[in-house]
Image (cartoon, rainbow, N blue to C red; front, side, top):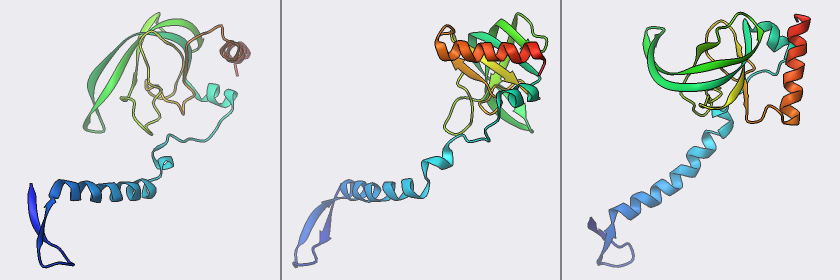
Length: 166
């Protein structure tokens, strides 16, 4: 939509595209907003804890393969909340009694919400505290290759914690 706007230096009118003006305004505002809301403000942050502290705080600790995920709605604190229900197949239990197949939950993955992002077909070490939600602060983590050097070391350390009853 073109409007005729008076030109400051002349006594004539110039056609101006309103959409171009709006775009220029947006391009100046966007960097300002990004500076005001730094990326750290939406990042998941939590205090670092030792492996033994994480293990002790958990009610259940296990290694599982996610075999299905589905979006569901539950009531939490009187409000409807979308959750991901992840069905797992137990690979190994380190702490607590667990069924061979079970379900855990997480919120839909998003910036700053500290969810792991459970995906069908991948394996995870899951630490559950007072609820069935899988979160990064609880110590949960996923992996692609259980035989990879770093993952194998972490799994062995976890077995040691389980055997020592720490």
